[in-house]
Image (cartoon, rainbow over all chains, first blue to last red):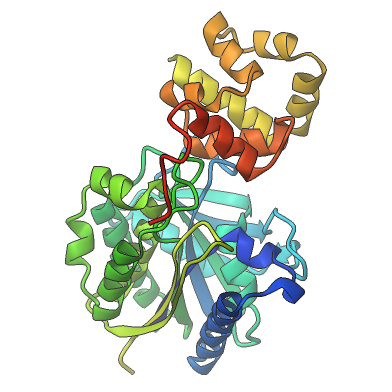
Length: 277
Length: 94
């Protein structure tokens, strides 16, 4: 039986990867070390597949079709943005498991939208390249997009429930896969809004504390209007964290890194959630 | 819904090279394809991102369209334009 062996949250702020190494700040070095820590942990867990939960930024999906939640079940490539040293070509998917998740969900109350061909953006491409596929044990990355950037956004509770659906589908898979789930997102940030560049560290740390405590309830109690006011439209991406938490319900973890600074436009949080052996 | 059609315009300008070229060559002709009210077309042609946001356009789109089409494609210029109509320096870093 396949199983989920761990969960992570991490940011996908493009500015991290646009910055040339000779201009790295101490904060940037800590951030890059945190990506390295997660990559190493995914290897230590012996993960064979990674589910990366990201957000479209109104680039992949247009006004003509905005899925609430979508899974890539076929050919995947990306990220479409150019970053120094980051491959943009094909990303190996675990097609049979991805198809299984989609159809298991559809049989159990989760009507996944599917992409048979998908070029991902940085929100999935960076975690996939930097943390998952850097491990030879990882043979496939399954991309999941939530409506967590473009309004109307998926509800917080539905994002959490979707994580549970991911877990049940993985556990219903007959193969011996060891799966990690990555919630990819910034915390407080105001994308394209007048406040862009501002962060709310107190909000960010509260979110990360919930992740580490395995306590989704305070996050699920948030109202979107309050999130927007306190932490900006970019903080809607905490749905991606909640989806991961739903896949590892009640599991506790550890904070790996938190940073914010003028180099970036968002609070950057890294944490691991542990699945008991 | 004017706001939704404006989102389509900005989405096209942010993601399609042919749209950007057409807009740069003749903004009025390009915008005529979308049958926008004159006031809405003017917002796009004049990069009035504050007005576009007030019309309901996603900030993700106003930012992407600015960074791929505006005469000065920097975050600072974008924010100056956006904040100019809401009060310079109204949003200090917390």
